[in-house]
Image 1 (cartoon, rainbow, N blue to C red):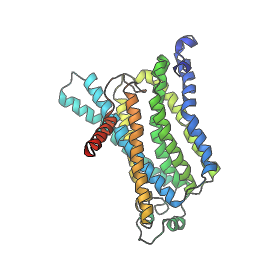
Image 2 (tube, rainbow, N blue to C red):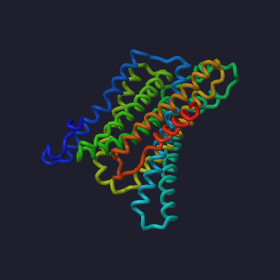
Image 3 (cartoon, rainbow, N blue to C red):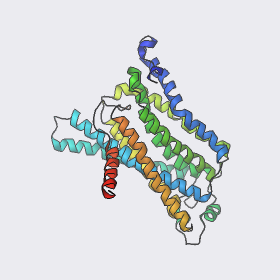
Length: 352
């Protein structure tokens, strides 16, 4: 597979052209499966039942919570620590700690400011009055006998309400696109640095995002063909972000605090999305049967396990590759894999 990508020497030492060609190749690998899934959803399962939507929201909220905290926020903490320890070694320990806190907390505040401001402006300018918005408490705080679907019909939510969650979800994909672009820049200089683990983990969680975006639109009344088309367009949006990441990578690699700050922002945004936008979609529904409730809990648990799985694959591959970060560094990036190993040893000891 490494032979597929070209070096600048193959195109007359033109690094920019080599990066562009490798971007096209990389995009083909990354987006083939998600694109096929988008159009398959139109015919295989055009619409989900109400309980199936609850299960999807439970699964995806657990997945996004884990990616936001165990993934992006951990990356932010680890990246800020590396930057402070290696770039600011002449500073006192107190100043190093303060700078690390400033990077992580500053990124978190930036992310929360952006997501809360965007949420307010989106609802205001799309004329979503509070009772019409999905997360009005009138839709979630109800008596035991009330039916959620009846409430949804009563308030007649429209497709615009669905796009708030979708746009917030795409903010995470923007971070992925920036890092993927950096990966292309690195493998252009050394094609052997192709990170298969990152490609696999990206495709796994982008498939979940594709499913959420599709059925979120269907739930709010969008036709399945338009839903698939919108899904396809939002998937393609990652390409210009990758281009920016690829060409800026060479200039930002020595600025070690940028990526930790961006990761912290992305981590709190995706965590905010999961807790504020997705969890209320299923947690307040008290009219479902006991069996359906436990199915939803199992979906949430499966989302946690799936997230740990893809983060483990990503972190294990990260120990061998830079994965497009703005810094060249070698450190242990397998805490989740270590956690899994500890859990396995504990179970073996307990049932021995």
